[in-house]
Amino acid sequence: MKIALIGAGNVAWHMGKALQHAGHEVVAVYSPTEAHRQELARLLPPAIPVASPDLSATEAELILIAVPDAVLAAVAGAVQVPAGAIVAHTSGSQPLSVLQQIPGARTGVFYPLQTFSRSKPVHFQTVPLLLESEDEHTLHTLQAVAATISREVHLVNSNKRKQLHLAAVFACNFTNHLLGISREILQQAELPPTLLQPLIQETIAKAAQQPPFQVQTGPAVRHDQNVIEEHLHMLQGHPLYRQVYQLLTNSIQQQHPKQNNNSAE
Amino acid sequence: MKIALIGAGNVAWHMGKALQHAGHEVVAVYSPTEAHRQELARLLPPAIPVASPDLSATEAELILIAVPDAVLAAVAGAVQVPAGAIVAHTSGSQPLSVLQQIPGARTGVFYPLQTFSRSKPVHFQTVPLLLESEDEHTLHTLQAVAATISREVHLVNSNKRKQLHLAAVFACNFTNHLLGISREILQQAELPPTLLQPLIQETIAKAAQQPPFQVQTGPAVRHDQNVIEEHLHMLQGHPLYRQVYQLLTNSIQQQHPKQNNNSAE
Image (cartoon, rainbow over all chains, first blue to last red; front, top):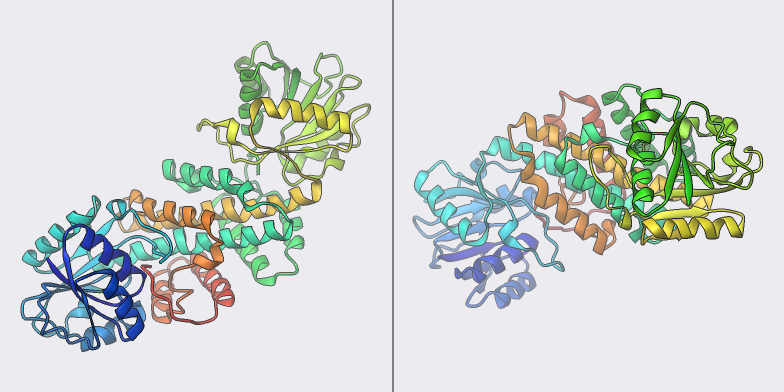
C-alpha cells in the first residue's frame, strides 16, 4: 500500500519503519520542520519530504497523521489528500471526528498503544493497534494494513479509546514518574538503581496476574503510621514529592480499611 | 543452621521455605496467632509451633524476626533467645538498634527486598538480601546463610536501608496503586486489562535502561492542556483519583519545562 506520513516524531518514525518493513511503500513525509521531514524521508526510501500538508498530488492511498494531540485539529484542517484516500490519525485521546473536516477523505483511527522513544527499538508485532472507522470498507482496509505489522489488532471506538488513554496515563506516564522519583532517592543515598529492579519486576508481574488493589503492600495499606511519618520527614526537603507520598498514601488507605497485614515493605 | 522464625506472615513463610530448601533446619515458629504458627510449622518440619516468644529453650542458632514494622519494637522487647544466638529482623524501615534490648543476643538485619504474597511463588535466588550487623562475626554468619538462598547479597547500613525502603514505596507500592486505578478505569470502560500490558512492560523496561525522568512521555510532559483538562473532567466522579492526576501532572511538569515533544500517549 502507498502510504504518506504527516508528522515526523517518534510515532511516525517507528510506524513508518514497521510499515516499510512489512512491504508497504512510504511515498511522502510531511513535517513543518524541514530537517525532520528530510531525516525521516531519508530513512524510508522512496519517500520524498514535502513542505506542505497538501498531499493531493501524491499517490498516497493511506495518510497517517501522527502529530501531537494539541495540534491535530489544526493539522487536519490544513491537510489535502487524493480523492478516495484514507486518512487516519494515531492519537489515543482525540476522537475520530477531528478528521471530519478533511475534504473527500475516508477517515479512521490507527492508534498504536505503546510508548515510543527514538533511541529504543520497538517490537511492533506486540504493539496493540486500536482501529476505528464509521465506514466498513475503510475499517477493513485499516485492519488489513494493521495486521501486516501487529498481531494485536482491536476495534475500539472513540469513547473507549479515551478511557483507555486515561488508564494508560496512570499505568505508564505516572508510573514512570514514580520510578524517576525512586531513582532520585536511590542516587541521593548512593545506592545502585539496579537494586530495586527485582522488586519492580515482581510488582508488575503480580499486578498482571491479580487485580492490583488486592495485592497492595507497604506502609500505607498496613496503616503503619510510624513508618509513614518517618518517610514524610525524610521527604521534607522536597515538598512536591512529600505531597505525592501523602496523597497516594491517602488514596491507598481510602481503598483499604485498616486490617492486619504482614509483608516485606 | 538451626533457625527459628518469629512471625508467620508472608515474609516468614517464603523465607522459611527458602531456608529449608537450602538445607537449614527450622526448629521453631512463634506467632501470637495459634492457627498461623501451627500452619507454618506444619509446612516446615521438624519445626514446632511455640506459644511464647521465649525461645531460650530451643536449639536455634539464628532467630529471624519477620513481623510488621509497627510491632517490631514490642516483639523485640519480649523475645528471649539461647545465649550467643543471632537475632536478625527482616524489616526495610527499622534500624538495627531496635534489637539492642534483647539480652545476650548478637544482632543483625536480614532484609529481603521483595514483595511477597502467600499465593505467588518467589524465586528467592534473585531476591536482594540486605544485611547489617555491627559485629563482624555475626555479619559473616548472616552472609553465609544469605548466600545459601540468594545470589544478591548486599551490606547496607540502617540509614541507607531506610532510603531504599522509601524508594521502594514509590517504585512499587505506589506504582501498584496506580496500576489498580488504571485497571478500574479499564473495567468501567469494559476493556480487557491485558490491553495495557505491553505498554506497562515497555515503560518498566525503558525506565530500567535510561533514567525515567529522561524518557517521560504523556500529556503532562507535553504540557498538552486540552488533554489534561479532558482527563480531569473524566475523573470528576472520583475526586481522589482526580487529585492524584492533578498532583502527578504538576510534579512531572515541574521537572519538565515546556518543550516540543511528540509521542504516542
